[in-house]
Amino acid sequence: MKDWATNPDESGMYVLSGLAGIGKSTIAYTIAAWADERQHLGAEFFFSRDEADRRSAKLFFTTIAYDLYFAKSGAFKRAIGKVLVTNGRYTGSPQEQLDALILDPLKPILNALPPTLIVVDALDECDDEARFILTGLRQLVQALPSFKVILTTRPDALSNDDSTTQEGRRVFRLHDIEADVVNEDIRIYLEHYLSAKQVKEQLPHLKKQWCASDEQVERLIQASGKLFIMASTAVRYILDTFWSAPDSQIKTLLDAFAQGHTPFDNLVDFYTVILRSAVPANCRNTRLVERYRAIVGTIVLSQVPLSVPSIASLMDIDIDQILVVVRQLQSVISVADDIPRVYHKSFVDYITDSEQCEDINLRIDPMKRHTRIASRCFEMMGKRLKFNILELGIPARFMSNEEGRAKDGITDEKLQEKIPLVLQYASAYWDSHLNGANIDDADLMKELEKFDNGRVLLPWIEVLSLIRKLDSAPRAIRVALK
Figure 1 (spheres, rainbow, N blue to C red):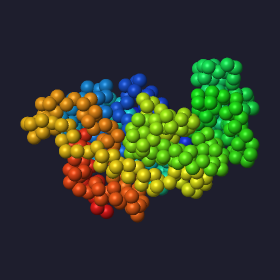
Figure 2 (figure 1 turned 90 degrees about the horizontal axis):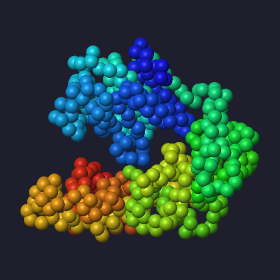
Figure 3 (figure 1 turned 180 degrees about the horizontal axis):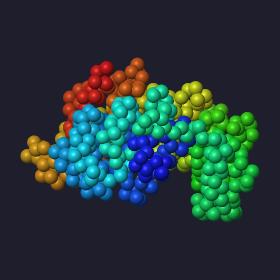
Figure 4 (figure 1 turned 180 degrees about the vertical axis):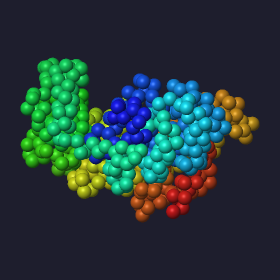
């Protein structure tokens, strides 16, 4: 792939196709970092269903244009800078963005453009216009020969025509690599991260030195079934700091394998073993199960990542309860800057699919969870929204947002104090949860009816304006009317 990226005679696009968990995103991150070190990285875009702005193609080419502007080439800055200043946050169609912000400014200076790599990861997680992303990127590399594009995706996001190598495009299918080659790579990975040195670094308070034996590594390799996500998840599970007991953790995994779950055809049985840390088999403790569903369901279904305090406030759950569940599941849920995120989309696929996740206690029912989250959003807005929420005086309340805030000294910190992040979330994304909710739920409909009056509706519009999300209001109203 590196040879392709640096060879001007090679095709302009490289499509890396592979099944979930096989390592596509890791390769994309690695190539992007490698290109950046050599000052060849022009732009990168990592689609993600976890975040509203990153699962939409609405501003894809605008984002690429901004990345090019901030790249290390003066040619890009001079050519694209004028257009960005004129157009700002360009809201035309993807084709109009591509033409106005990238192709039209750069075509006149073709000979001055340096070799440039664009990395696009997880096209399959794009909710809309994914087809045009492919078409637009093909146009880009054809019109600007110094540009190359690496794109990763699951196979089912490609048409039969797109999934084959043709002139101008190379397609490589990771799942076609020989098992022996993949297994050897996984062996190197496991032997490194389960070595005595690495275990000591991850678990410094472990009293007895520990490392995985050759036999244990071999059994983990066989269980991984060519999926790197299984190997990396196994390592996180074994070196779980909540338990700090790598010997018993690996035995739990290997015992599960010995009971007929190995080799795993997919991640289903593997994730089940991990989730047993939070919800034991045949659990009859309904409060424990509901706690798990509420916390994990909110993490996987929130439209943008929420902090632990925001989850606690939104769902009315004690922070300590959230931390317990997150720590129990730290091999599949990471926490950075107090924000829990799922490591891999395959985990979300598993726990929200009734065919994959057969244990009803472990399964997250999206409709039920969306219903609960939507209800809580309405409850929160009903209690906290009010006219002139920033308490602006006269004449500040009659000025533009920026001028009024400046007049009364409302800093970003003060705005967040008056409109906390969790209230911003409820105001901006209640419609997404309502769209996936059970509209026959009586409690939810009562909350919607309370929202549909001037006392809440107008302050909601005011807040959207203040947090610069007013463009989402028409969509939300359409969802409510529907």
